[in-house]
Amino acid sequence: MTHKRYFLCIFLMLNAAAIFAQTPIQVADLSFKLNGNTAEEFYYSFAEGDIMVVDFELAKGKGVQFEIVELPNQIKTSQFTAKMTDYRLNVFSTKVYLFRITNGLGNKMCSLHIKRIPKSQETLKFNTGWEWKTLYDTTYNHYSEDSLVGHDTVHYMETIKEVDSREVSEEMLFDRKEEIPSIAKMFLDENPRKCITFHLPQNIENTYLRKTVIGWGFWICVGDHSSSWWSKNKNLMIKGASTIAGTTMSPLGAFVAGEITNLLIPDKGAVDNVIWAVISNWNDRNAFVNGERAYCMQTGNGPGAWGKFLDAKDTQGTYHICLRNDNTIGKIRVNVKVSVLVETITYKDVDYPRTRIVPQYVKVPKVRRNITSRQIRVPVNEGR
Picture 1 (cartoon, helix red, strand yellow):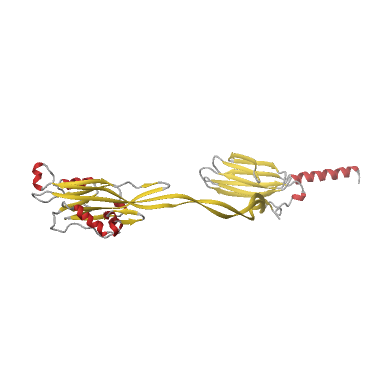
Picture 2 (cartoon, rainbow, N blue to C red; picture 1 turned 45 degrees about the vertical axis):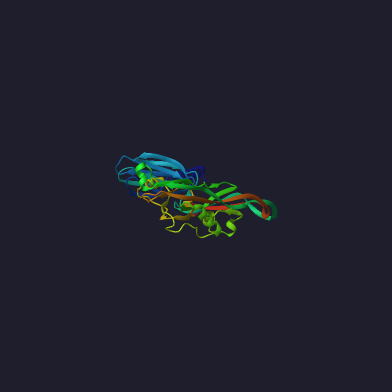
């Protein structure tokens, strides 16, 4: 081969390569409608060394946001446009590219043409499709865990509050003799109605002491011989007294405590009667004194009476025993006794030896492996 022919061959080969390198290969030829406030996305793969050629145009309208992104997140171009002609982009590595068109208000008709110019004959038939590839990410969480290595016996003292003493005692709140005028004395401003007011002891409770009123009772006797009737009540009791938890009580206290079931009073007709009432508030007490209707806890009419109250709701506060003489001429004398039973409990701290089994642990370092998966777009065949 002569030198002229040799140089002619070289010239023809270089010219053919140049012609091949500038021949675009169609990737996508799209026409689509883009609704208002929506976006369309298209994905295509390109080979290393490709030249991407993009033509985009709106049929009408002011424009849309046009983006080309090299996955995963490298933005190659982002522009608001209605027309893009022969936009070229060099591809430096084989990747999947995203073409995103984002619309604002109004519907628009779009056309998108994408081509590639291969670098060489080797990538001429490059597959521009893509596929999903699953990636697995592993993270390690370091932590510690208690591990049982044995048990210990622990000796200790436990302090428990216990009852030290319990006592029920009687307190005679009052023992009074009242003289009540007749109805006729009302003209002399003497009221044939009288009320005796008394306050029950207040309950006390603290860490080591509790005092509680557990009940109270009353005894009413008309006439000048109330003392003898009281003596008869004492004779009802064994040896003239009642003993509860080592405490000596009167007949009234024994009645409240349940040691005896009733108390003695004069027989009807032996002496005058008295109208009596037990009242728990001041308004009813004043109504009774003024001859008005009043609510009474207990009431009666006779030569005497007795009664008791054991409910907790009736063992605190102020009470009134009200008396009325219904004689027109004669006055009456009435003996009234009120007695209260108080329970006193004292406490003390008592130490008791105790043992308990205590587990022994040590910290053991551990590692927990967490595997999460995610999917990415890759050129066809790369994910296999």
